[in-house]
Image (cartoon, rainbow, N blue to C red; front, side, top):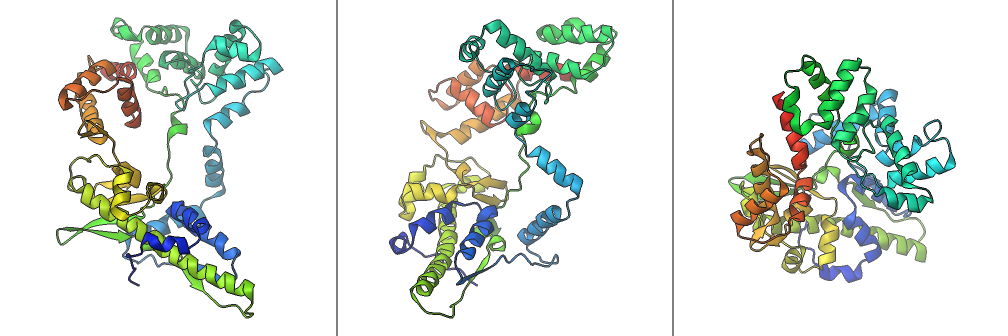
Length: 422
């Protein structure tokens, strides 16, 4: 059925905002669950999830869903157990290990849990020992003693202050002879001068161990393997960009009259019809947002850079409130020839007349082409970006952009480059 994408915001006052906003904001993967809840509360509604699709279907989104469903439904007990373990957060994992014999007393456990509070997503400790001592009513020496015991926790290397200490923690996982253990400890501590150890007869063995270390230590807890479901497809058809809603993941709603016709039945019938309209309005809103994105970010879809674009710009274009656009793009994805992107990725702030997206791409190119013997520090990257674009920006923005691009710090890149050259 052809969808009507001309619904206007002026309809919203007649519809229930309490129903509309959650429906607009929920992700495509959660939409079926959201509507099932609505169905359970309304006898006039039936939901057909619409996913009984043959594998011969030519629609790629249908095939993707079938693969996803098959993966889940055919999971063995081992796979289910793995999924359960992998869903445990870093902080839950650490908290489960705060027990005897490593932490035998209530005060040691209290200190350990306070230390966990200051461990970042990468697994590094960012707290202040003196501050933690004061919070726990103890002395800094005791706090540091407890932190050192994190060398025996999983994931290995967590709780260290930097990559060097993390590697020293991770050495505990290996049964090494004395010569190799002493060599590795020295290499890690003096990594900035690793060339001193190149001719050591056990350097090859040391390199094999170094390559197994995790950097950052909580790496496996940072990954996100969740399948991204595109709400909208942007495709080339006859040399023109066209928009297609991902109907394969939209449940079909059926509105039925119930036998008795009292006020309750009339109200539920009205709410059911309203929900059908709201589902169409959700599609219309995403379609129209995508339409504006194609217009405003046409260069990107043609292989270029993103231009500065604010939520307010799209809101003004469509006659919506900015908060409505913010809800509409929350956890929504768009698939085009360049890949799958979050809707929010198309909104880029500007520094001067340059979008932050363009600055990030330039930063990525700088790091990719840097001299591995002398990688760029954030200070140098900052200077090069200001010179290239003729803008002024604070240096901490560089660190923020690096983290968003998953680019290691200057010291970490230097370590990785030296490790490659061994």
